[in-house]
Image (cartoon, rainbow, N blue to C red; front, side, top):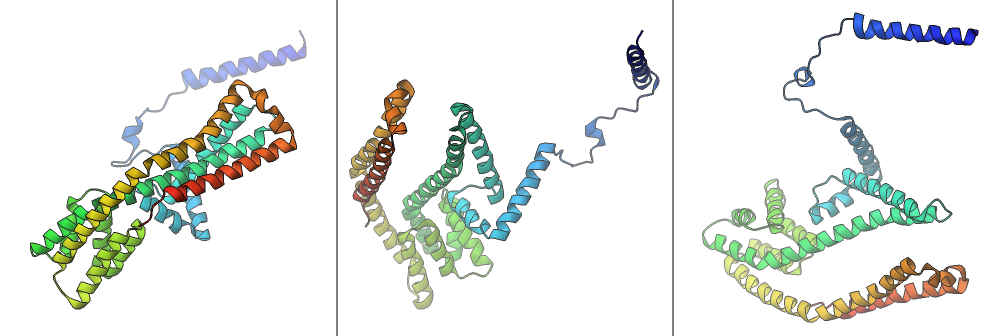
Length: 318
């Protein structure tokens, strides 16, 4: 028998003795469930949660040093997203990593993998910005649609004998979102010492509502000169209701132009995508020839200019 085989046999015997001592002869300690070893009221935190919280803390510190936290927090607040800014950035980064890996899998391990991965990763922040813009626009549109009802309730509260701040607080409890949150913000800011006119003007700026700016100006004039504010708000509510009807009518009349713009923009992109899937060699000359690349660049520029032109044509401002 060779010395190597003897050494291997000795190691196996020692391993068997170690297993025998640890599993059979050594007494095992009392097995207490984790629920009994945890302090009363303590919430179990997983390792993944700890790593996530630590990463969010690092991102939050970096954003505070660079001064970008307030801007992102304001955008999330207007969009109605309750996620903290650092956590939102972490979600976007994770989505960018997943999309980048997806781009690499779709393109295969080639020279095009890196640019495709970069393009797919860029879709995450672009998509996040689009989603925030969509949610912000929807909240502002809902605020404008609820404004006449809000002023009606506010005027009714003033006629019932309530103070202006109490009437605003009452409306914030009876109206739906987003007016509910905006009026509650006005009440809270006024209670900690801010001027009511300034709080109303900030709400008009946040919601980009010229109609509500009239209300803020009416309240400021009433605080300085006095008068029957309930009648002023009732007249403003009537005017805003008529403007809302005109706005909705204009939106309905311009719907055909906006839909045509979307179809004309989506048609070339859709045709290009379908042809690349079913006959990729059809566009081989465009990608291999410099003139083809120039032609595609000119087409993209013309599409952007045309989309902006049609957006200006179908957008009515009054």
